[in-house]
Length: 482
Image 1 (cartoon, rainbow, N blue to C red):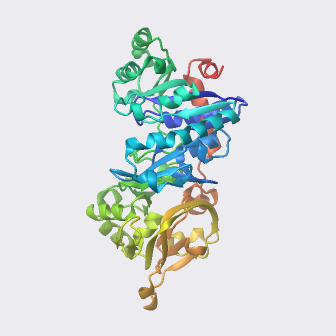
Image 2: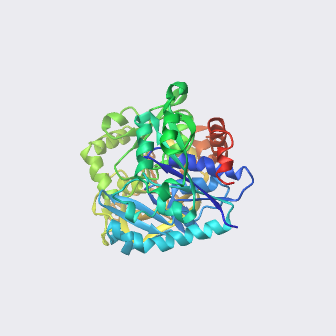
């Protein structure tokens, strides 16, 4: 078989490519077709573990929506920003140090054969390939080295949808300008415009869609209303800063949103738990009054720890813990809670930790990337509901964490509450750190902590399909794979 390829392009980052791609994966899967997602290059610190390494979280969820097993060919190149001018390069699931050191423009020639091979293999094995672009296809300064937008579209002869965020204003100019900057052969691949995040009376859009079609020959095939709570996590950052809760607020959870936050998608279920208010904390004021403070994963632990101190959040977290309130550190957050970061290989950086757990982290050259199932032992304090709960998750980290030897000899010992150094707790029981990502995605843990369940991923995916079925012009999605 040679798959029909449908591609979702955007006029900007944040236009809605990822969720629409996810919706299309499930839409075509519900037609009885064998479907796979593909994104040649993803820049994100949200990653998931698959059998062969790691891929962007968006492609992981898209594979599940397609009812396919997530794998590295679906996202052959993953860039994980560590600083403003440097990213760790993950090629076919594995960190590639040589590519990480290579200048941005120099990578294309090296990685395109790998990207093209993964694309061709997936096309040969499926009925439909749903491809996601990145940023805008009309970044003319990057067009010659592009390996994620129109080069992929041409290679796969994809039928493309171009989506724009109309809530930001200038949507018709974005659509027309993007189309106008593309070479003729690439324009020919665009089959429809999509207006996303629309608020108001759709009748007021006329005559703009008709005028745009007269200028370009391309119809506007969907106007999608603003939808805040579709259930998918944001891919690239903390875009949804609204502090919302379903029903009466009984518990406020503050997640520290440092610059290199990673795997923030694992907190999506907290947005769906009745009575829980989730806030993103960038200052002490944001965390004031919270019942829990969570330190999430980080792609640059020492750098984010320095940022946290510069904002005064270190003092706020210490005061919160001193009052006996709950603190949770996940992966990089666990490392921050310890006494020290030691970096003999130049992986992340040295520095003192927050000192809330008597632990020390040493960064190793080898990266731990694995799925993991483990059970909590006896857990104390506000986390006691986790005692004996078996959970499934994943690990992605360089650091290895252990008891601080000098503190241990003096009797200050962290309590291990999960095997193999996976989770630790302070003597008072209110500070918990664990390496395992995905705690709140595990139904058993979610029920133990909140007595509630979040919507299943399958129900979220099916909800996306029902939504686009209401707003796409009839027959458009079938015509893309005819």
